[in-house]
Length: 101
Image (tube, rainbow, N blue to C red; front, side):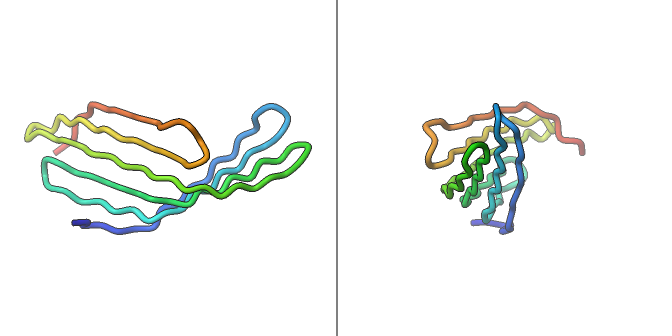
């Protein structure tokens, strides 16, 4: 079960081509695990406002999830994924890291 529940949000502003785009994700995060395995999941609402010759606002749903495995020596492997409705792609990430004692 979830050990931590929180509200997370963010902001991204970029200027592609001749317009601007503002992204505002907000969601509820759930995380937990043990000393050697950690997980996190965050469903969210994604607001995107695009301005240029016309201005549009879209509301989509998205989800992020990740899992991390850590050895007793502190070396870890993290895997994550991200998806937003209205797109045809899934972003996947991986990392190897060392956790300080």
